[in-house]
Length: 139
Length: 139
DNA sequence: CAGAATCCGGAAAGATACTG
DNA sequence: CAGTATCTTTCCGGATTCTG
Image (cartoon, rainbow over all chains, first blue to last red):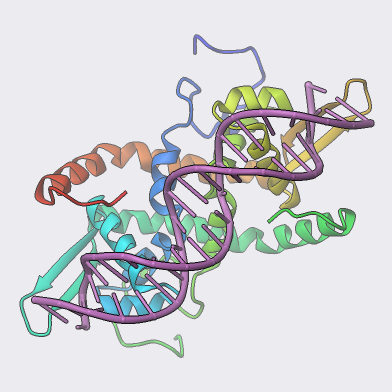
């Protein structure tokens, strides 16, 4: 039993943490890592195999070279992506997922599945909301 | 077969989309929704049952009233949260997860599980990276 | 209590130019 | 090619004040 249990009904199947004795389940750790605008897209692309810098930039579409650098550096730092430099000229670098990073793709797939499964429902909900609330500035 | 198949080796078990014929798998939809700073925390709290505005604000800890309003409004608009107003005085409002929203908690749990499982590995990777790259400004 | 409206600072992201 | 270095702009989010 959690010492801070409030007596509120908490169905086990709806408790995302499995227990309530820590504030955010550490979820923020993941989200801070893949919740940004580009990380997931880069991971998805790398799931298709190693890619070079330019390949990634072309594949992700819309990402600036600056953001790609930052994104890929962070992923490297977190041990999700391996960066390999080949001492050729001009320089050649490739990026590939590490074991941990590959495991992430399973998570991403879960996200994609859920997204696809509910995308229309959400779109409808939005539409309905927008009709009932003619002038809002949400989003 | 995908018409845009490039011939690159793409192990099915690493393909997060299941297919490559769309750019981002719609993942961005989900991430734009739960990738922000507070949405997940609110959903997690609501997984414990209906909450009133103030209860949420106290529970989430650190969230401003403004951000709570915005967060909960977006979730409502997307049909993930149901907002109920009781015409009492003073006003009383409660928020609860919809069916779709409850389904989200499974996703969140997956995130939490992955996070907990790899948190130490990632921490070590970071530490190692920071040692080899004494002065970087990543993050 | 449950918000709405406003102001404001800092961080994130984009664009661009330059380099090994 | 694969970045780094700047500069500019955008916008997220906090603090505060006011209302039904």
